[in-house]
Length: 88
Image (cartoon, rainbow, N blue to C red; front, side, top):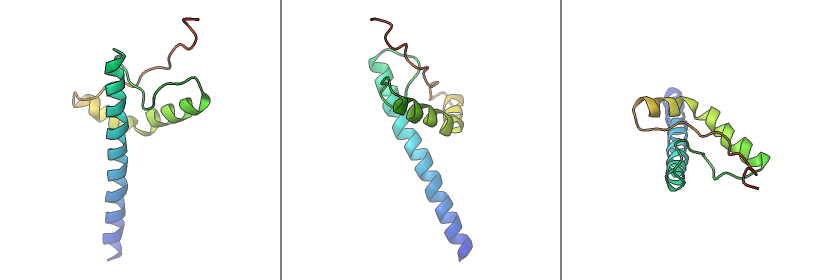
């Protein structure tokens, strides 16, 4: 019985991990398509440390799934940080 709960919990956590990757990456792909970018961001770019932590945290957290996604031919590489203030 205890093993069953552990498997259920593991399946739930794995599902949350995969589902959150799919939701964030596909939203990022749609945004990248609007801006004609090859790479994508997990969150809409803004010049703040909070955005850097969130976006690059997701880059490292979802690296294994992103690698498999690209290997299957469905994914993209995460984008590099925009050059803030270049047009000023």
